Image 1: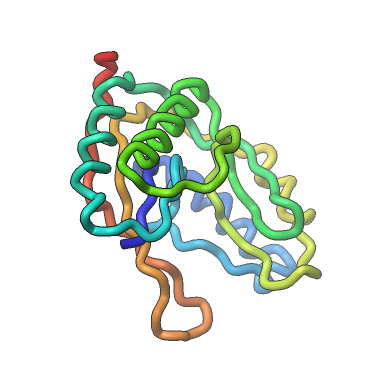
Image 2: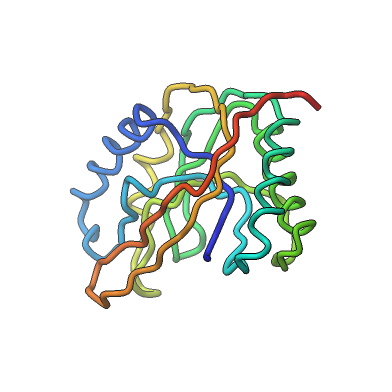
Length: 190
């Protein structure tokens, strides 16, 4: 099962971002990008890749403890940028220290459950909104509307374990489907 830990923004926050993304879709060159699907917008905390079924109960127990130890915190979608010439993203503002702490705890939970994780790097909160189809796709025209984007603050109240179902049809534009396997409330008890 292909899994990752995530923070899922609430529907009103996604609607605010959706309004900006709709503007980006109208810009010249937008058809040269693969836009991510709105139901799949999330902040990945720890990407685990393929996880053996027998590891999942321990992983869930460890993620539950991580959520139990982390307090709820304020966050909002904010600004944006690009990763080289590959992807457009929006970022986050608010209690980024607690978001990073939750990401570290999710990563540690996966490692302790026996899941081989990629090399550890400092967490950078981002929500991917589009990917370039090729190296020659210019992303600069899309940056100005993202730079000024300021979403409304919301309270992050849970940690989610999400399954990623990759496209299987081979049809152009098919998106991965995400399903929440489990979620735990943030309780701040540690």
